[in-house]
Image (cartoon, rainbow over all chains, first blue to last red; front, side):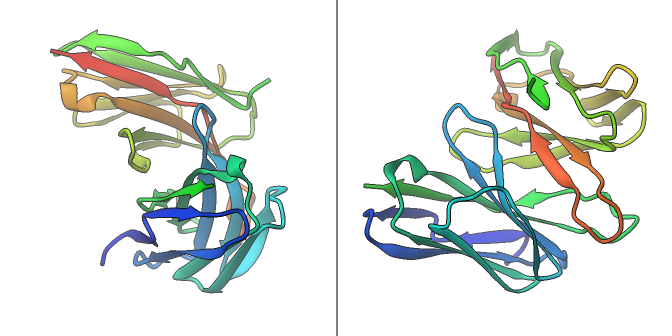
Length: 115
Length: 115
């Protein structure tokens, strides 16, 4: 595997379900990100983990719960979602050491539909 | 006022022409600037990064940055139908030390290259 991978690629869930999205990066980066992309809206940053520590929670509802066990893996746990949470969820990673350029590389995304 | 602003388009150019995509940003401390290409149903792909005033060329792509005017642009020479996509401008504010630096995206410009 190369780059940033995400599973599953597609997910349909009911409002009472619990599911998890998984992201793995093979780039040796130290920061990982969750973004939400809805139709007609700019990419929205949700969470940031830098060296496994959460450094940003962009006012995301508690029904979204991130987990970062190490610098290569990132999860997004989902529970009691709403239909408006249907979107493309993107994971990204970057290097953030001094002197790096903070270029973020994205995974293929998970297309989530909440019914 | 939007932090990163792009014309949503669509921008339509004939094959072989130069496509010009523009982006303005509001935060003067922004330090790094990126262009991503996103095909329909796919995730964003980093195509250009620029950090200092002036032009940066990579193949058919040229990024231009003017920090005094808070303006960044992307030129695509000899446009091809395969360049048809949404182009996202992203602006990074360096937060110092080992922190991640927040990346803010514009809403994207839809480019169509017609044969």
